[in-house]
Image (cartoon, rainbow, N blue to C red; front, top):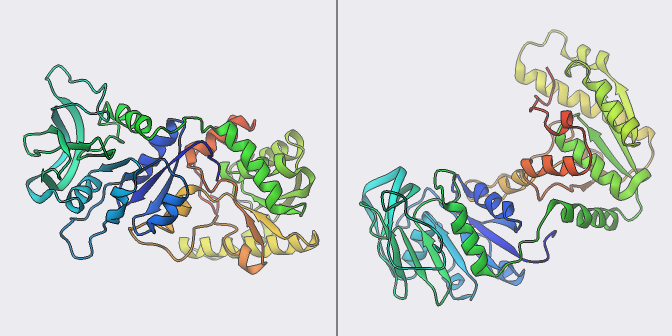
Length: 400
């Protein structure tokens, strides 16, 4: 865990903006982590999270099998913020009156503020006397639970925000995480202040803690990293190299299908600029041979993946015993495996090295598994990678 000064948990109810909630919190220098709404509550509470955010979602609280947080959450003594479906779930479980809305609200809406709350402190009415927000809901809270105060309303939604200040329970029917709610950032800032969380999480701190973590994990053993020329594997390689130096060996397999001059650029950057042990394998003839006569795009992709594993496996054996494989798994890959929308059986891996951990019995080093893509790019800049790698546009894994 890279955050020691406080962190926020986000419970995912299948909402399309769940990852955006976590990113908004991180943008304010607070570490956030996403859990499925089915995750047991006790480990989350025991882990010291300073607050919990309930995401939106497509369900109705009245559906059979509708996802609901444990009611004990609201008696746990830590601040909770419900967003959209998270508000409906809070209202439903706490004894409020939640009903299917007579008119669904989707898109731009204007709320009228009423009363006062720490959550909405500093949120100012516009020239119309109302506040612009973004709505996306069917159910609505008609009457807040006992102990809650209604904080806002729209023409179609009598309770657009509510709060129980004594128990630090808050909810909004709209989406403060999207840019279409112009004052949404202020709402998150207020919630973090209520949580009394230190806003000290940074990418520089992440580098320091991750370097120490990598050293402890591999414990003096050798690590192999497959470079693709993309930003994820590049940042992984440089970060691992900073941690263990000569213990790292990188391998770049040139399949003859990359962008013009890309292979030369990769070799120069990592071998010459970063002084990383790099094996450059020109396997153009093998890949072209494997693709000869193949016209189906999906079959081409599979042929390229299989050929990569074969080449990588042959070259790796020449290096002797290397127990660890470093790869650029990102946080969205991890989230996909636990999402309420449909857990997958396996975490996605890099298109080229996907079969290697099991086939060659590697243990994995995944230093980026807590980061979103934009954070990886910022990390790459801090590590000194050139802009042409950090800001490279996405490129098909199997090449052109």
